[in-house]
Image (cartoon, rainbow, N blue to C red; front, top):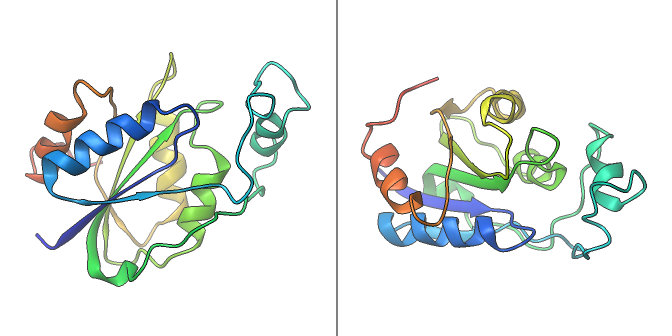
Length: 161
């Protein structure tokens, strides 16, 4: 297996902790998908239909700008992509990440954190963004189980979609 990248977006720090656990356990590089305009607590108020996150998530074409780029994405064979579940799927800024690189021939593996949503709709959604990639099934993780799951999925024990 070639070089591995753990890329993640985290609004509250929960996904960031899980991503660090996976990267540390697997010897992978770590990359944070940082918004060019950071989210405030007001932006993240999902109960407010006019909040930034609500407006982004109701517009499938929304692509919030990312502050930084992965240096030399070509060096990675496997990319684990982490995010919190928003409205049942990945946040639109993760779609910006997917749209920013050519993932043809790479193995992509999503992982997510969630307070109650499952991974099914998010798995289908992310796969639709990068159909030329080879996908493995993702999983909801916590900081406590992320390292074990990362080792498992990178060693080929996780099921294929």
